[in-house]
Amino acid sequence: MKNDPPAKLDSSKIRADFPIFKRLIRGKPLIYLDNPATTQHPQCVIDAISNFYSQHNANIRRATHLLSYEATQLYEEAHKKVAAFIGADNWHEIVFTRNATEALNLIAYAWGYWNLQEGDEILLTIMEHHSNIVPWQMLQNMKGIKLKYAMTTPEGRLDMDDFRRQLTSKVKLVSINHASNVLGTINPVKEMVLLAKNINAVTIIDGAQSVPHIPVNVKEIGCDFMAVSGHKMLGPTGSGFLYGKKKLMEKMHPFLYGGDMIDEVTLHNATWNELPWKYEAGTPAIADAIGLGAAIDYLSALGMENIMHYEQELNRYCLEQLQQIPDITIHGPLSTHDRLGVFTFNLNGISSHEVANLLDTYGIAVRSGNHCAQPLANHLHMGDTLRIGFYIYNTRKEIDVMIEILKKALALF
Image 1 (tube, rainbow, N blue to C red):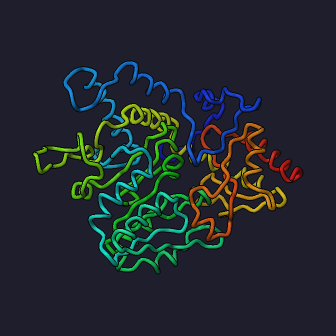
Image 2 (image 1 turned 135 degrees about the vertical axis):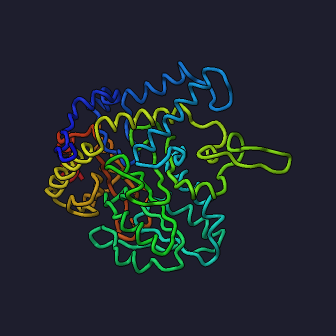
């Protein structure tokens, strides 16, 4: 029933589905906390890819033989799984890309280049990943448009008053992340999209960090586009997708030109294929798309509500433990309200890279650096930082081990 409490996930059973956790790292059990960068793969995803290559390998939509038919069916079924997972109206609104970065570039070239004029403005936030900044800088240089950024509060949440102030009639595009890959902050994207629609701005959501961890419904959010990386949600590397409203994408120009994205070609002209093939030029990453479909099956079987609640428990526990460490600076909200299990911090006076290397000697994989968010790091005067992020296979015990090594780092350095 709808009001039933969330099911408690069994992390030991989940971990058994991931072959990589049988491996020892420098003689220690692997503790993988670099999930905001990419996640590990359950056996079912590996099997789906292997099964395609061993049983169904053929190009799609270009032949009448059985293997091509089977490959096409599997590839189209992956589109349908993605559409259902994010609540899209139609699977034709799902375009497979290599990652969220490519999806954002697709919009920049296929919509932005043709629709934005000199003097138009794009509104971003200071907490964007580079992939949601640099494509728009390209348009700024090519088209003479202006980029604006809504700032954060000292706590690390988006300053909604500043967002509203910047949302003037000159803003034609609003592109914002659903959740920060550095601060863990979950932005109120439904409200932000509604505000943008009031001035008829096109809206893009970078869902790379949110879609793997919380229930997301694009119709409820109301956005025009959403970009997602499949490799951050148990899918293969080189997998991702773009959601776009059908009426909007039908009017747009293609991003890449060539095979299979065409309807008819003459010596001097061409017309374009229907969605989503219009934006999937050439032979796509068929096996990776099928692997992403298998990842979605796995996540759906666990239940996104259950995943969210499990990670919230880890989130609360980790924050409590981190706050007990002396000489630590935690960046971002110091509460578990509206945030993901992503923590970025410094041990005061110690290089984040040195601490990351020490953690690695104990089999603990974390990220150090600026996390592809240099404008945010500069704005908050963060410098290089350590980042950890949880997923369904992480445990409290792993947090305890990490905390112990962080305390050793303070003693050593």
